[in-house]
Image (tube, rainbow, N blue to C red; front, side, top):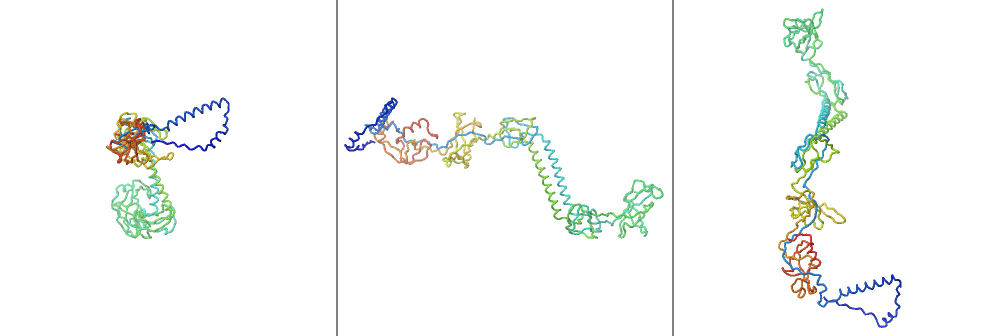
Length: 547
């Protein structure tokens, strides 16, 4: 392509003459000034010469540009489109065992390198203190529960035995406190009389024998039964030794404690008389404070042992009951905490994996504050790589994509992985956002946790794609096609890049070094590639692998 230089007119002859008559500026006459002047003139000459050679039209048209391009042919290649990055491989899971309690290590039945399963016992610590705490917590719970149960039970006043209510001493609305009389209950259906018998004769009487009881005054006789015979001698009337015999009699209905009687057991008669005693005579009292909310009986009501007589309640009683309920719950929680603490004295494997460190052995003492990790477990079923992905490449990634991984520590080997997860929780630094991608390696060979690796996430593999160097594509999706006279006779060099034409092409995928051409070129056609790009490619430029 020829370059034409047009020189602007310098003005009329008169103007030129006036210019020639203008005085020239005088330069300083110092040695330093002369020195800089000389250097400036030399530099100006060199720059003018360089500019002339650069702009000088060549005799063959584009010879001045011939070294700026190199020919390359469109050919079919296997392209691999990938997203690259680096990182450090780690176990898929790891755990540092730390003690939650203080104590002596009694057992540590494992060693470094052992395979352990989740739940296996690794350490057992002395738990005497924890067991004592549990015992104390159990007692506290029992005590709190008893207090609650007693109050709940005492809010219902009950008869202590079977009988007939003689008097009700309170009414609804009354306020009572512990010891306040509530009702009188008596059992007069059965009476007993305790009579003296001469000691030598009493020794012949035994419990269960029949007796005849004679009521004083009416001389009525009633059948009775010997209930008990005393074994102790007493001094009776007149100084004779006697023993007490207790006889039970059924009340025909009219007998009371005011009546007295004598008795005869077989042929043996008693040595005196005594008054009848009721089987039960009880004044029932309140055992708790509260307001009488209900009276369940009246005078003359027959009751059995445990029958409800009066119910207590009111705000004060309910508040006391609620306080005791809270005390019970607190005691239960304290017991639960103590039991949970006991579990901490047995330390089990939290994950399945391989023991890579054992820092404490049987006999050592551990402290939950000062002690470091007891052991370290790695789950080596997979290795994991966390790699940061540019926001520009995020849309290309998805779970399950294959990953090629290499490590400088293990040259010559390529390890295979898969994308497990791509997080959308990005991190922005200086206006640029990256997203973490998790890659898993199942077959990792000699790779060890902590090794630094480089990874290529395979986004796409294009087989047998017609492609050219990516640098050959110009802005607007065009390429330079050589015409006749552009290339050297053997086609290996560009001699006149001016003898070329632009052609539009349709682009497919690319790998950063080569780009697929889907239309506009045929296999074998030559395109011009900037020589600098060719040099970069020759030097190994590009970020993806081309098969």
